Length: 575
Image 1: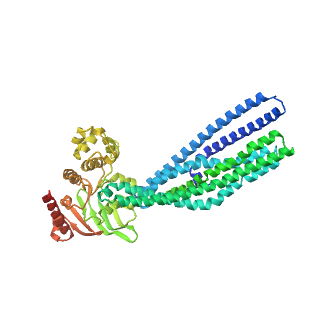
Image 2: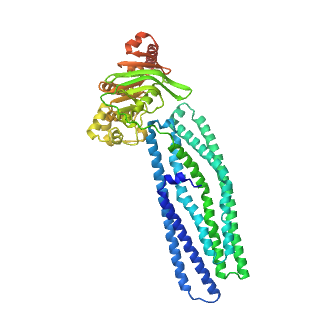
Image 3: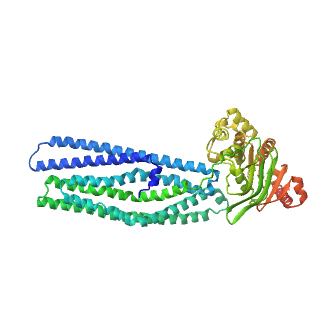
């Protein structure tokens, strides 16, 4: 149950563990001294000799104070050890995610990362703060007491020492069962968390389609599986605790019986018998307490396996390539991408996206438009083919340079809880209020903010107190503050009011005059004035050209255009 890699990872905790053990040992020694002195005093009192009673009382008081100080120090060292573990491991997980970059989801689920960094680290907090100190103390305490009691009765001390290893033997007996069971427990715990997070994120959709009852039943099934495995774990823990109690207190009872027998035979005096009886439990209690921490340690081991699985994920090679702001044309050649090995969603896509013009990628939903955006922003890395920005292959450009040069605005850009100012400063932390208001003006949101509390307007989670159009315009203002040479608008005007849609489209066309701008949209009316349109169908570029050229071809684009015009005319008539 000692994981060298884990302890080495949090090496700073070693000094706190050592301090914890030393505090417990000093407390135990002071307690033993107290018992020996009280035993000697009782023996003298039984002989009607009260000499030294005051000295013993003073010594007992000093021993109690020392023990109290040791208890405080033990708690302090435990806290420091736990704090170090949480700070170190959570820092390592966070830094690992930063190194994995925006494509981390290709290798690990968000729900598992959350559970490992929260509940998993909490389990290891107890492992370092309680189990490890107890492990070393449980080895040291019986040997110390054996050495002390040998001066009283070698026979009793030897019997008590022999009983101590029986406790870890009983622990080892259940270890294999416990390890397998806890592995299943953590697997089911992760599955339940994954299901819960997914249902929570899609709760509105479930309500709309009246599928919440179905998902509720599914969640109940996952919960029932988790309940069963939890009860199995608890049953195993209770059974093992019963066994350890039997061994521990049975051993103490044997020691007490031997002490009484030796006293009856006259081999030891009253004070010796008293000391053995009072300290016999101290032989077994440290190991018994270690046994109670055993299941915490097993949980910690299972959690550490998941943590190291995350920390051991292969990291992308550090790239040194840079995007030059004055040369941000994009060239895509033979781009293919698969989310699953047997399901390719992009098939040898070719695109030319020059600067200072508006390039649109259009097509029906599911044709691969957003996958292209994910590749260009570095979120989907395992592509084949060539993607170049300014002549430099995307795979050779550092993620820092990509984030500094490419701004992505999706249909559901996240707005954080806080003030409008705090959200806008994410785009440019050095921007002053004048720059923030200028961005709001461009996004046609300044007048509304002035009618509220200005830049100090409080926003709820994901700006739930704004309309969809206002939220998207605020996201646009933040993106404008980022001021990168490349902008990718991925369905940025979906599901918002027509007024906001027009404002956003005006700014997109204005940006395209001096930036590299890619407009991804299934609504063709928004992209009709683009300088170049690429039509995607089932992951293939089937057509390319201007709006008029594509209409003249009477192909896929023309059919989509006519269909959307008919649907929009029907919608206007119904109003």
